[in-house]
Image (cartoon, rainbow, N blue to C red):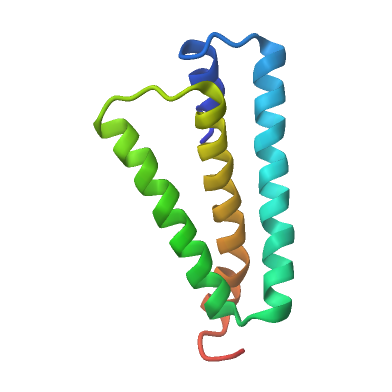
Length: 107
């Protein structure tokens, strides 16, 4: 994920300002994932939120894998949407993962 700025530069020809805007959108996606995780933990157990995050990552990780295998170059906004969804899922997953690792049989 740290090399996305190079992908935006080389593959899509974005300027420094465009790369900054795209990376800022990805950062907002990360913060949104943390907020969604906190909201989900109010209504669900850590295991349920963990399963949701893992399913989310499976779906978007598989889509990245398929795009790489078939050598497709999606439009920039589609690629940005997939990357934002992947980062969102990572941040949803991290909160429950820490609590499940620390206390595997607790609430």
